[in-house]
Amino acid sequence: MSTEAINWLYYSLAKRDTPETVAAKVCDALGGAAPSEAKRVAAAGTRKRFGWSSMPSRFRGADRMDKQVAKARELAELFLKQDLPGADDIAELDAFIDQFNALIGKSRDQNSFRYARLDRKARADWGLTLSRRRYDKLFRLAARLEKRLVRYKRSLQTHELVLISKTGLVADLKLADLEGKPWTASFVAYLSARMKLRSEFTIAGQQRAFDKLSAKLLEGCEKREDANWFAIAHVFPREDVLARLTDAEKGALLGRSYGVLTRTAQKLEEAFEKSGINLETMVVKRGNDSSTWNTFAGAWNRARDFWIALVTAVGMTRSFDALLPGKVMRLMAADVALWHRVTGGGVHPDTLVWRELPKPWLVLAGKAVCTKDMIDNVCARHSVDPIKSGWSAARARTAIADFRPTPELVHGVSVENPYLAHFLRKLGAFSGKELKLDQIQQILDVT
Image 1 (cartoon, one colour):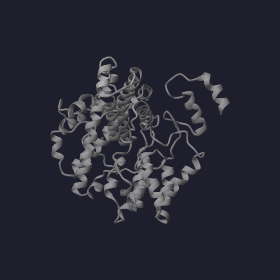
Image 2 (cartoon, rainbow, N blue to C red; image 1 turned 60 degrees about the vertical axis):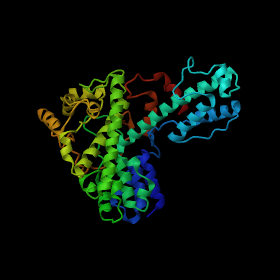
Image 3 (cartoon, helix red, strand yellow; image 1 turned 120 degrees about the horizontal axis):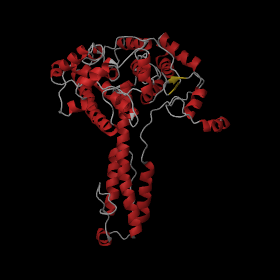
Image 4 (cartoon, one colour; image 1 turned 90 degrees about the vertical axis):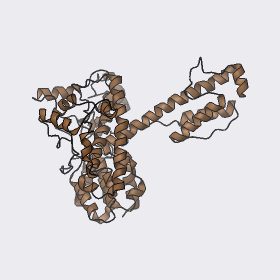
């Protein structure tokens, strides 16, 4: 057992390494016990890669507030002769802003430069001997800090939902959950990497995450008494996995998944009201922020699937007679929709079901009712199996996919060579926008 490899597998959960890269670390973590499939997957990455990829191996996170905090500390020391501490997490940042506001007699959220500033007498009463110019500079900075913190919190929430949309509740795991458990760490990390595969530009469906190596690693966990099934359930809430959990563990995951649904429903409603999405067709139009909507939709559907599986595991399926919000459809690119029509297809049956059901944010807000019977009836009208499609039951997660090497993608289009992919991305190829042909010579000169 390699402690270093297990640590690497844990820290890969928040990253976007290829399954081939993770499989190589699985071989290190399991040593001679590693399945031959792990070696085959790792070798596929060695054969295909050029030593690097044009695709980032990390999700874009929230930009920290270090610069803004440093400037506030500098000005507080320079103008007010006050030494303010640093701030890292959200609680510290909130406290830092309150401290900075208190130094200049400003209240939180009172940012009007015309009405909220202190006049000369009020500044004197507060004990400020600053010139108006210096006070104004501090006031503007305090207002900017508050606005920046709001954006920072929003970015952190979006980043959390990005991870949930891809890998479920894996981001909640701690290193201690995987330490000393190489099979658990290998399964969780590898399946997470498969779930984080980028979407391809196709009408044939995306790759399924649970492949032959995932199945082999899960079999290995079943043979180990030290397997952490609670950790495994964070990424793979299948019926047999949840059956191994205690009631307390099931309850913890149930509460966590419903909490995600509540927050995501609010985000979906805000996104809909802001960009005017066509809920009938779910095809992108100008002005729609499809990336944001699809992130929230993915998080909703993932958390909903977890929630349904856990409600079932604790024997509370009768609650679906009163509350079972539906799935959320992702926005489809117009060219993909046209491709479907040209090849004889039409509107996806799930979209037809989505049209008729109350929208999830209305259901969770108590403004509409959606139950299992309503979903089953709408699915029947459109010839959709409500269980297999995940409308009224958690996905079975029993199908085992064949492994396919991770493609190098430019906006979903596979490009064999990462150097060419990098070049095409800089030109704006496959982005739906006009190519930056005037930059070709500049790029060629640089490369």
